[in-house]
Length: 117
Image (cartoon, rainbow, N blue to C red; front, side):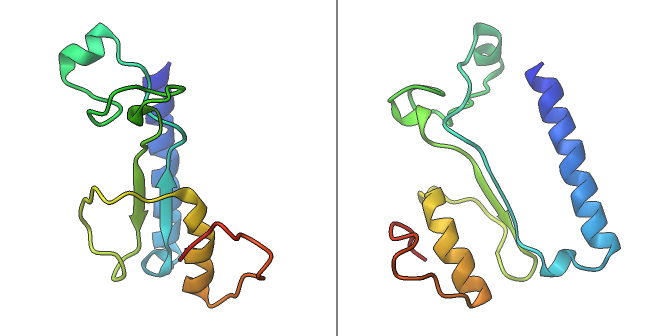
């Protein structure tokens, strides 16, 4: 079931990327992809394959441990974001202020007070 969902998600993201490229707007599009809380619990078969859904951190989804909160975060923007991997933490609440700054929009002082660019 989970693998089917991942396969379908991959196919749908490809459709979006293909449409952006077909319409000539892929190079000027920021794509952000992030998961919700933590990875799934690892079963014996998954662990034997070497897969670590929580990136090696203890815990998983719904756990108070670090692995219950860390998630993948992907951002792609051709000619703006250098491809690579970082271990620097990011928090989703900062996306609002960051995106507002990218498009030159000010956020009212009484809104999104916990969001930082």
